[in-house]
Image (cartoon, rainbow, N blue to C red; front, side, top):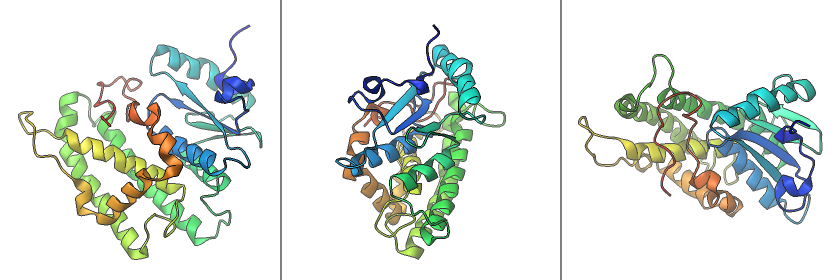
Length: 283
């Protein structure tokens, strides 16, 4: 009998390691990338719903090697297209309680935000509107990162090109930071969609700022020598406060102590057939 797709497992022990059937299963590569915000949302839901309606989850991770590629593209994706969702892609989220299989990152974050209670259900609410705008703004920033760390035409193709383009990227990033800083100042908010409470857009916003906290330490001089390290957030006090507030949230303590945060690469270089990239930041 051929092995079952990872997302089809029915064994409770296998699902969570805690003897409980999970409410959710997420699937992604063994890296942070788009998986980071989803993992943060799931950790948040598990923490805030403990002792009540269970929000346990299983994190299916595909290795960044030939075996992982085959597991997803030749087995799990094929089965998902046939049995669950013709749009099958990574990342994916399965809600076992409602028997739904959801793909596309922004859709998953929106869905989880409502399910774990950080987003409002009223589609016409100001919170939902603010949340959607910031989610898309942050995704624009993420797309700029992709052009920096993946091997695409007219983009970075080698390690030397990465170091050459990094200052230019960080300079452009500051323009986005200024817009985000102005947004927080305009609304007088600590977080992006609610004044003093987290919304789903905040998780990806944190991840992208956190990635740039690492990237700014990699800047080199023209001859490869070390240069004075930047402190981008020092110019944006509200963003700095936001990053610190997210990093200290007790709901995310388990995530920040996990290997998925501390050890995983920030983005997937192996599958792009590119250079190895800067690897995980040292925390």
